[in-house]
Image 1: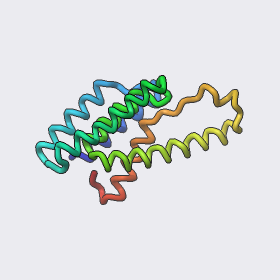
Image 2 (image 1 turned 90 degrees about the vertical axis):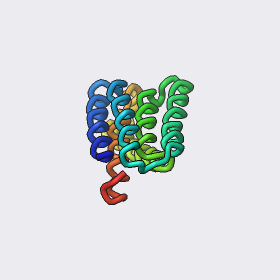
Image 3 (image 1 turned 180 degrees about the vertical axis):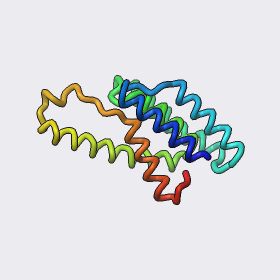
Length: 146
């Protein structure tokens, strides 16, 4: 149930991020509440693991603010959610997978645009689909569970 909820929520966030380049806060708050409720049902992670996992997302929000949103605040909020579901180490692994996927997407975009600076200077990549792909890889490696 946790896995399905996270995947469906992240799929919705990905579609919205692709279309609007924004992460809807109401969706992320809903996923946070879902993560906390399912924690009390399944108790898969300790409260400490959930707090440290969410803390990683809070650090990313800080990075977004300091970098004037070179990484979006919404991306940090996504990792607060991921951290609540996965804990610190799980969310670190997903951040790593997501970053590799984003780098590959960026490289493919550069190749398609023939590395033309003028065609690339204002391009942004939505990160939520990369996070969704990272979660899917993590789930597949872990036998279908988060």
